[in-house]
Length: 447
Image 1 (spheres, helix red, strand yellow):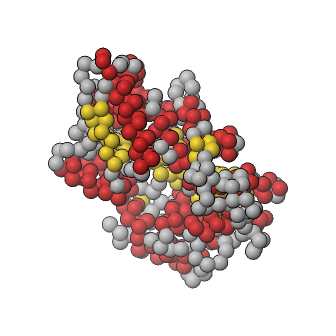
Image 2: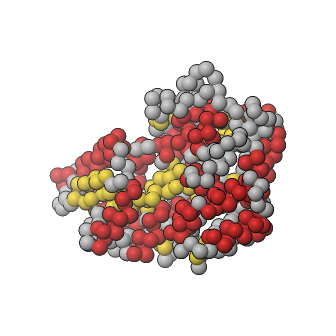
Image 3: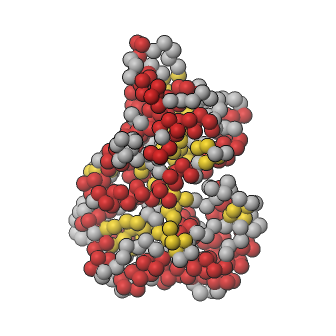
């Protein structure tokens, strides 16, 4: 592909429809298919048409069908021009030839790679190029009672040690539990939290060659930490529901959750109200809450953040120039609109422009969130907390991404073997060494 220059793109965007010599139509597949979100994307397509004369056909696709539909379209030589997709498809589609890696890399270079979150760029590297254009994402968070931490003189929960110290200081059941750690083996929530805890200590079950036996010393640290927070949790089968309920009732010092809790914390969603006081619309709990996106263990002091990143992929069947114009528009002039589709779960992976480095973070923080009531995050949370929310994308990670083994890592996670064996360990049924040996034996057989 001929290099796509941002200056040329900006000039194109200012041209009125009447002045466009060749107006083309491109197809855009999106998994953001809820009616309100689809309407916002249709509005962006209309705006792009006014700027360039080109038409974008916005085509909703069910996320569960995206892989099979894309494979079928590729085989038929009928891929759409641009696909909005999750991290799990970036490297497999690059390898298969579904993505035009050079075209996507050119767009990233034209927008300037250093304006993107490093973690989102790192997870899309293929043959020295950025195989798809990072759009948005979110990172799992340690949500904690900052007011209680401050009163007790506790450091923020940015490490295993800091979390353990807070558990020791604040755990006082049944009025206050130090943590609510998921233990329900067949819930994906336990898988996500465990992967975050493993990543925090630099432990992964895969390397570039495939399965990698879990290291005894660093995995023992992971298991001991998880047992510590599990023992400081309420009794019973725990997953996301109990985690949120206990924190909202003011009976948990810490939980791990997605950012979709942020509007609920502030009393903006009637179906999940804070119950810490008698007013379900109160922002009291939000004002007492802090968040941490990146935390580390003793074997990985720099820590990690578990992230879900989404990308634009220009495909190998695309009208490349027009597709690149549309992606550039969506990441520049239209980027605030892109984020507004669902701001509580779309953290800006592109912070700003070279001369206005926080432009999009500031714009995103002012977008309204909520369901039954709406307010911008900047009115609900302090600027420092907003910056911490976005900063998790700096260290964004997932098992198998940088190793090119995301498919194997996904199969390992989906087997729920780690969940099951960790549960046996925290229930004192097996030793840590036996748990690690058992995980290595079972995971090594997954292909």
